[in-house]
Length: 104
Image 1 (cartoon, rainbow, N blue to C red):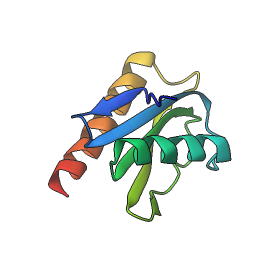
Image 2 (cartoon, helix red, strand yellow; image 1 turned 60 degrees about the vertical axis):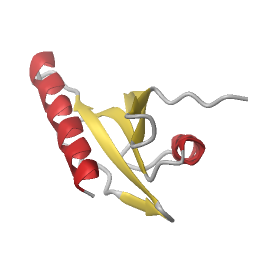
Image 3 (cartoon, rainbow, N blue to C red; image 1 turned 135 degrees about the vertical axis):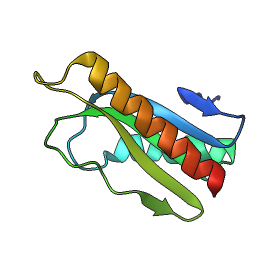
Image 4 (cartoon, one colour; image 1 turned 180 degrees about the horizontal axis):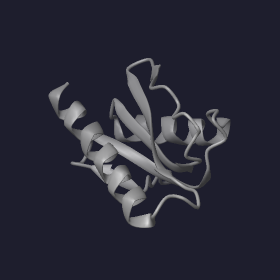
């Protein structure tokens, strides 16, 4: 059996998995179990779920599970959000997340 997260950062610094669905505002149990499995398999303390969310939805708080820290990074979806702006915000969030990991 193999595990294949969508994004692997610098071998084992961090992993992320993309969910092609709108966030419900709560952590989905299956997504949670999968990301914890990926992080455990890669022996990394940092993981993220990348998903979509409505403009007025709040991102999930960072979750600490033992030695692992799980973050949510979202593409803000909605009719008032230009794709270029949403992509830029997601890229900025991802960059900020990585900077924080490297500083840790």
